[in-house]
Length: 250
Image (cartoon, rainbow, N blue to C red; front, side, top):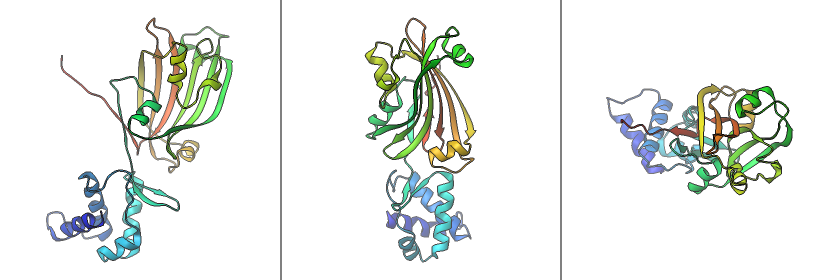
């Protein structure tokens, strides 16, 4: 990796068409280029500041400034005591209805959840409208942070009719696995996505800076008979998660 990065940095330094007089910007572009060309794989550790400084004959201040800019962009992730790593992005196709847990397992990642709430209560007016439930109906509520390994990716608030999920403690990592056992896994869903800036509490839970880019998603899941069995509101980290839709002509 260090050789590929050094070669790209020198190429940018010598090519008049791409020359950038500020060394930290040149290094930032070199790192971005080798990542895009897959000379460095996602999840791989970047060489240390000291090693890069010696290999490229740059000051550690210059190297640190280049890395800080790429961390802010979301291309790199710094883990305390472990180093700097190439950020792994999760690609979520929007053509299939799959769960967060299924998506991560398919990529060889270990999903887990940190729960803040797993309770039963009376439906609120907003929940009543989203789930087509009468006032006074009981619902199960789940509030959690979703992780890939030890990296927080999303915050979720989910509401499910209590007659579908009478005991929210039955939900481990996957809500859909719990609903599958009762024969009430959603067969289709409607989602609304919009770009947001993460607030202080969301940023703290997701280990990013306040004001970082995020995705706000609302999902309603339906059974074949049209009943709504899931209303989920999520906040995803924009530096890791990509949602991809395939479009076709008639």
